[in-house]
Image (cartoon, rainbow, N blue to C red; front, side, top):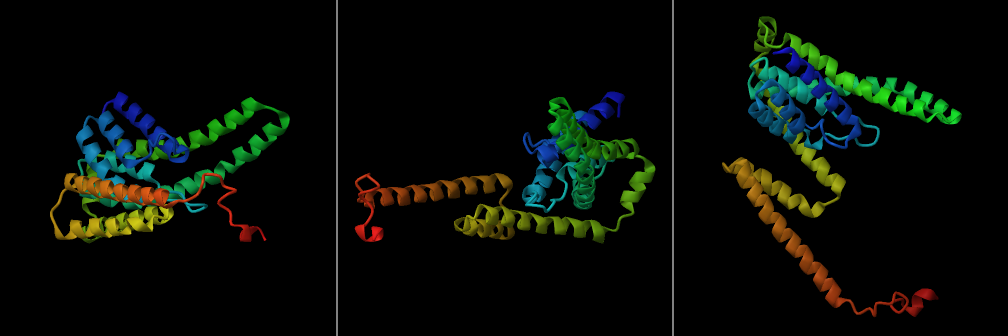
Length: 267
């Protein structure tokens, strides 16, 4: 790894860390973060494959209220470095992503606790009418989130690929790595279920179960699943349109809201 690659890798890691709290450009998502790491390290194909696989795991990882989700940014960046620089398999990267996400969850809670200081300081600047001080508080808290991912990424990038690290990764029993991969599959199911429940779209549950049944009992690839999803979405939307048209045709209102109110409801 060259010096330029090392610097760019730290920049990507910092941007991913900041993106995990901004939730605007989605740089912290595995598909984006792993692809950028692969682009910097000269193996974008592996980055895309790893990112796409981890994206399925992290689909349901989101902050709900005060509950902190596993950290997708740290898991994506570090696992991509270990796979590309450390010459590990995609399966090993997926297995390592789960504990890395849990460790990143603890780390981001610690950093958010520190940023409480900046919040109180911003309140003080607000009372003084110091807009520049408030901006610096925002930037300071954001930089901490970037450092939270950049520092571990720099450490891993510096030692990845060495004989010691490779020996440590190879010494992990297969039952553990395989178990983490299986548990990651469970996380996918739970993630999809959480998303559907938050959307309150119970009418979509049959498609949810249909997809997993097809995945278990057939050999359909992701392209086939995408085509099936588009077809199901087409017929689902057509059904909704027919229901709306029927409701509109069955409406006998004159268009004036006052005329549609029954006189008995006013008594």
